[in-house]
Image (tube, rainbow, N blue to C red; front, side, top):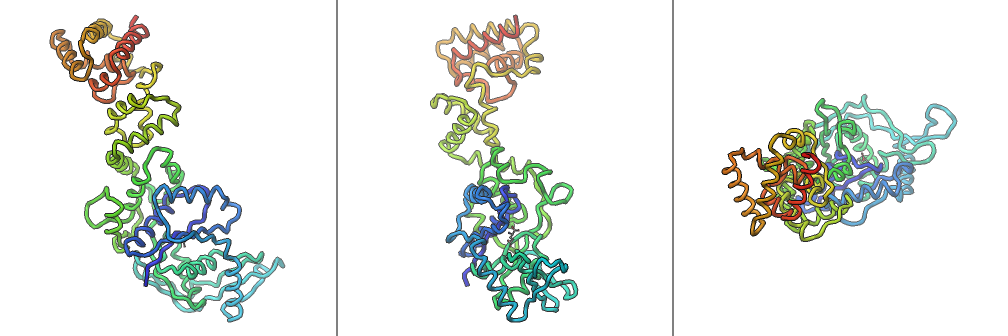
Amino acid sequence: MKVRTRFAPSPTGNVHIGNMRAAIYNWLFARHMGGEFLLRVEDTDIERSTPEAIKALLDAMDWFGLDIDGEPLYQTTRQQAHLEAAEMLLAKGLAYKEDKGGTGQGECVIFKMPGTDSSFVDGIKGEMTKKAENMQDFVIVRSNGTPVFHLANVLDDIEQGITHVIRGDDHVENTFRHIALYKALGADVPNFAHLPMIVNAQGKPYSKRDGDAFVGDFRDKGFLGDALFNYLALLGWSPGDDREVMTRKEMIEAFTLERCQSSAAQVDLRKLTWMNGEYMLKLSREEFDAIAFQALETAGIDAEPEYAEKVFGLVRERVKTVADIVPMVGYFFTEDFEYDEKAVRKKLQKDGVVEVLNQVKEIFQSLEVFNEATTDKALHDFVETSGLGFGAVMAPVRIAVSGIQSGPDLFPLLAVLGRSRTIERIDRTIDQFLQ
Ligand code: GLU
């Protein structure tokens, strides 16, 4: 039988990383098994399932490259079928009507639990059982005539021919009810696998309060979809060896439910940042430049392409997230860059610095050619002949041309800035801070 999995989110506008991890596992499992991965939008909560919320969800899937088989199924289009199934259960005596609470507001349809113990083998958690006395009858159609989640979810899984339901373990309790519904509806019970929660350092469900919890937050912070995908794939699953940065193909090949862990998975943002840096390094020069140009554009920075490409080349190996780019390269594109106050105080406003900068300026002016090799040699010669320390020369030069103490290697940086910009910046720094 062909494996069919699905992602069945209830769109709310914000897509939690826990939901996306469920989508990723369903996708990886389907692709590993040569099966199909479907999407069902559980949009019955009319207030929250707005077109914007649905778009946010589809965008998140797109960003992660989660391609679906067939068309998405929108649960609201199935209401008639859900109500007909409830009628059928009533007709068979497997459900009954009751005015819950006796409020006179009308009757709900209630599903009758079979009154026997229930068990299933969870693909991740193993054997799960529940005693008959701990399972109560439950509402499947509200008194206002709308179907309840349990009924809609099970009927749509039957409709979509789902063979494996992989979802968060907040649904374990529901699964006992769902199994009874499958049986009452005369349908095959699918395989279930419940993923452990994603938790914070205190072991509590990871939420907005713990930091970024929604896919959009990570996107805004400059993470790459591929890196977050890889990180989430490993948040509760391991390939069985120590591989961490993996291609899609490798993840698909290695993915099995047996290798999913049953204990809660803890978010580690440092690890995610590291992994994102690895993905940034894997980008081709063209891909990196395209992302960097986009970042400049968003920041309203106008950049001459040839110059900008040289600048990107200086920083690309240091960039961990897309959001690092603008702060790292900003000073290349404006003469109005900010100076780090502490750097100015500690490294510039000291005896002798003005003389050093003036001498460096003269050396630069006298160079026949101004490039990485010539500036490197000239400043090293100057350090030697002047008897000054290396840092006493390089630090003021760096701060004068960039405003900050850290950044790419100084000589390639000077070469990209070029002679006239470098000299103008040294002059301006002297005027501004050392007069
Ligand atoms: N809409 C439900 C949720 O997002 C579906 C759960 C399931 O995968 O069955 O929690």
